[in-house]
Each structure stands twice: as C-alpha cells, then as structure tokens.
Length: 294
Ligand SMILES: C[S@@+](CC[C@H](N)C(=O)[O-])C[C@H]1O[C@@H](n2cnc3c(N)ncnc32)[C@H](O)[C@@H]1O
Image (cartoon, rainbow, N blue to C red; front, side, top):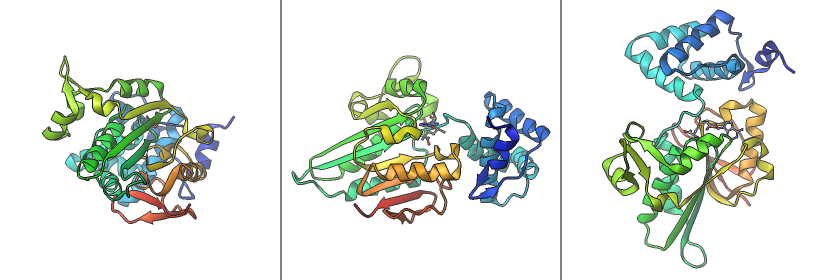
C-alpha cells in the first residue's frame, strides 16, 4: 500500500514531477471547494487535485499554488477562472453542450460519413464516461440534427458508459431540472424535451430510444464487447489517471474505432500523444484524432 507521500512523489504531468503541496495549502483549497460547491474533497484525492491545478497553472502561466489561489479569489476574472477549474476537479461535473468545438467535429464527421452499401448512413457513437447523461443526449441531438441535413436514409445510436451506477440510472431516466438545461436554445428544447411536473424536463422518447446506458470501468475495456464506432467521445476522464495509463486507455479505445472514425479527448488530457493508426485532427480547444488505417 502506497503512502500519501509516495503517491505524491509519483504524480506527474507530462513526465514532470509535481511540486509538493503542504497540508495548510491543501486545507485552503479543500475549504474553498467546500465553501463554493458544498462538496467535501477527500484527502485521498489530493494528488488528483494537484495534477489538475498544475495542468491549469501551466496553461495560464501561473508559477505557484498560492499565486493561483490568490488569482481565483480575486474579482470577476477569478470567478471565471474558478468555473474552469471546478469543471476539472468535481467528479461527476457535466453539462449539456459542454465543449462546442468538439461538437463541431462530431457534426462534421456525421455530415461527411459515406453511405453504406445499401445507400443509408449509419452512425455509432460512444460516450465513454457519460456521467448523468448530459453529454450523451448532447451527442444524440448533434448527430440527429446533422443527419437531418442529409438526403439519405439514416440511423444512429449512442452507447453511454460510466463506472458510476447512480449516474447511469440518472441518465437513463433522463429528467433534468430547468437550471441544468437553460443553456439549450428554444428550438432544441421544443424538439427534444417534454416538460413534466416540478419544473423538470424529460428527454423525448425518440432520443432516449437512440441511447443505451451500460456500466463499464474503462480500466477493463479489453473485456467489453463494444462495437466499431464512428465517434468515441472521451472527455474529462483521463485526468483521473497517470500518463502511462492514459496512453494505454487511449490505445485501447482506438481498437473500437472504425477506419475514418474520430476519437475526441479532453483538451490537455493527453498532450503529445502519438499512435501509429491515428492522425491528429487540427482543431482549437479540442484534442482529437482520426483513425487513418485498418
Ligand atoms: C467529470 S465527469 C465527465 C463527464 C462527461 N464526460 C463530461 O465531460 O461532461 C467524469 C466521469 O468519469 C467517470 N469515471 C471515473 N472513473 C471511471 C472509470 N474508471 N471508468 C469509467 N468511468 C469513470 C465518473 O463516474 C464521472 O461520471
């Protein structure tokens, strides 16, 4: 069993050993998270917090934990920065249309998919860490809309997996509070949601029928029967793992992608990754690869 110190010493971002965070500093972050989100951040997740802080500090050129902390506490810019950080450190955090640049790539992939031998278009997508379903239904909406612009007969399905059973139950039921869906425009609301009681909305039957939720631990992906995907969407999951494991998981995902299929990762989650079957797709704010070989 590793001690906390050993875990910390072994924690790295892009091969670099991370600076130590002392207990008072850690406490300061835990208090801030609890105060602002109501969630208790357990000491066992200290290395996870440090990895994410350092990743973000590097992105914005911040030199120390304390400097970053002061920045987050300061004014409107601090609040803006806080919303970016909180998305990365709160485990089930998700929302509809979370990453527009990645969704544009999904749309392009659907719009350019060649028809099969029978002349129809078939799209299969996989949300690898689907949490409570917002990402899954977003993908289903984007695919449905992109297919509607095509003249061929079309079909699609979205496979949604996560390790967290409670999140899967929530996603399957597909009831969302108004606050959670107020980023959607009116046209999407009317087409894909039905108002139910207590200010809640439910995803319409037609979209729910396109989605299949199943429990899967990504670390056991090798044993799972997942089909040949056109789109694998794996965002805000790799952050839980060290670099070596991230590469292994991404490599395993490639095995479930058809030639021409798209692998979308979270921006900054696997910088500099190379794989012999994959070509990097150039896109701002998104880390994506296309499978170029059998
Ligand atoms: C921050 S949420 C991201 C949700 C969604 N992908 C998004 O970007 O909005 C991370 C999700 O990863 C799931 N997760 C964590 N470890 C996992 C594992 N080993 N296998 C599968 N899912 C996992 C969590 O249960 C959680 O729902």
